[in-house]
Structure formats: C-alpha cells, structure tokens
Length: 192
Image 1 (tube, rainbow, N blue to C red):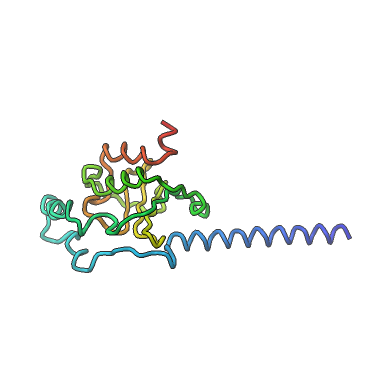
Image 2: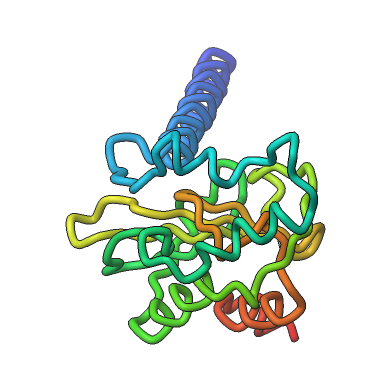
C-alpha cells in the first residue's frame, strides 16, 4: 500500500514538473513574440531598402546614407510615444518574470540613448538576440509593446532593436554607449 502511495506521489510530482515546464516554455515563447500585445511602427519595404548594403556601396557611402537619417523624426526609436519601459534579464524561461519598470527619468534617458548616434558604432557581428543579457520593452498608453531593444554587453557589445533606427547604426555600442547603458541597468551598476 505504501509503495502505491509513493508511486502515485512521484507520478503527481513528475506531471506537475512537466506541466510547469510546458507553461514556462509557452510564456517564454509568447513573450519573445509579443503575442497579441504589440503595435510596432515598422518600416515600409522602400524605407528598409534605404539601409541595406547595395552592390555599388563602399563603407563611406553606406555610412553616409545612414547619417542622412540620424536626426529624421520619422526614424526615431521607437516611432511612437512611450509611456512605460520594462527591463528584463534575458534568461530562458525565467526572463518574462524578471521585469523591472523604469521611472520617468530613466525612460527619458533610454529614449535619448537610443536616438543618439554617438552611443553606437559601425561594428557588425553574427550574434543572436538570445546571446544578449538584457532587453528593454517599450510600451504605449494602451500597454502594447511598441519597441524592443536587446543588449549583448559582456560578450559582444552589440544591440538589436525593433523597430529599426538608423541612429543605432549597425548595432555596435561605442565606448560611450557601453558606459551610458550600464548606468540604466541596475545589475550592471551594482557590480561596478
């Protein structure tokens, strides 16, 4: 009898753990896709083509094309009024539960950071958003996600944003940018 009870208890624990893992995986996937909760202002195909490397390009012409749009309000990040920003640790399955809401001064600072080309460099690597340690989600007054920016600080010094912003160049962080963004990430400043 005790053996049956023990076996049943183990089965319940096992099924509970599997259910929890499935639940966390679904939440993680929904979070990554901003499922049912996004309103990004994405570029048109013509706008995207402006920022793609063309066969006739050299480094200077490519960078100059970006520079023309650094301060064009149509390309500011995230393209809409931000009312809330949350910072997350990019931890598989647990990331969605690590959100910390920024205060109004931090929101203003992050928006300024993202639209200041001196915070970014022309570095380009083949990293994935999953390599990043942190990401910010930007929300509008309807609580819809209107922007997201990933930061790979330790491994590669790169960013990846949605929607695209030419002021962020090709995603590399400048030395100034690395120092500035670390001020906005509490875990980074407490370690220094």
